[in-house]
Image (cartoon, rainbow, N blue to C red; front, side):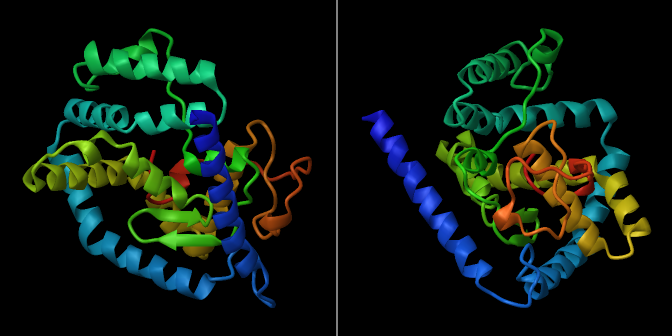
Length: 265
């Protein structure tokens, strides 16, 4: 029964994403990777204004007034709290051995690490992994589809934006009947903690890139391609990603996640 249910989930996801990517792919005289560039640029600018006037000042204050030790502990706790999403996608991708190891990692950090405040699992040779439902869909053969920019969350694609919904569903906070007075500050602190980790990289992008929007898009697509095909080089940023051959490589190296903005770690 469980196998049949998983099979239908995969079929529905494949059909939904392929339908969306096919609709965008029929447009002519547009960048096939970013056919919604006008809307994406507008949302990117909205996000930049939000960051400039709200997130960055609060993030700067967070870095200035919160001790490094406490910030590290909070970051560890947030990573551990959301690590169930990694474990779920390990198993959805058929990586049972990695899934068991990641389950042990979360269990150790949740107990010996006092709710994840301390990363004891890494010292015990259980390293962290990074995966999500967007990468699971990639393993199932779904193409990235058009590039999308989502305010607060940052760069994405039609395929990758599904990871946010799945991450909410497997977040323990979603299923705990906690008061808003607790969940809202927790979520806000998570956003500020995430923003504070990439402050230097975001400044580098803004100060050096001729077109920060294109820089962000290119870095994100190359980074995700590097996660989808570990050890392989990624396609040119303006190549039609609908038709990328899995056996084709280029000379462009995957970019670091730190150059992208937003998104779940």
